[in-house]
Amino acid sequence: MAYRQSGAVGDIYLIGGEGVTHAAVSVRNGKGEAQTWHDNGGELVLLGSITFDAAPAGWTTLTIPLSADYQPGNPLHIRPGRAGRGGCLLSGG
Image (cartoon, rainbow, N blue to C red; front, side, top):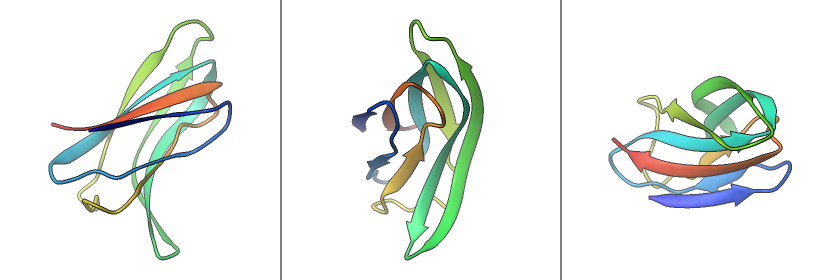
């Protein structure tokens, strides 16, 4: 399991192992669509997404299911949408 935090605007990259089924993303102060991707040598593969509307105060936790296209060891690109700040937790389940 890994955790990373982005600034006001930014994508997050994590590397996960076997058994990962979702990415948990905590966001605040924004709305949009949080997405997870693999970049397979320039070929982007969308693994999952979820729309959100997060208040400025407090954190909203989103769970983005990962598709069967998830590859352990391949960097997972997490784009938290238009949130003011975001943090990501990669976990199995």
